[in-house]
Image 1 (cartoon, rainbow, N blue to C red):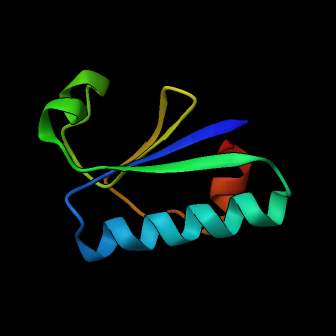
Image 2: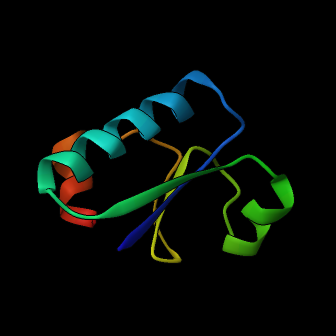
Length: 76
């Protein structure tokens, strides 16, 4: 099972990234869990200074932008 984490404060872009990630994972037909992380201290644990960010299985894949579901599918 893939662990997908959305790092962000709950802003509009963070919500867009969460929705696009869910769409990409559903389209890929994979088992996954999405966790929304809004604690600034946890952002630092990942070395993320700009949100939103997408973390896949503990590895930061995207920061500071909202890629398309097609781009996200390639990352997961």
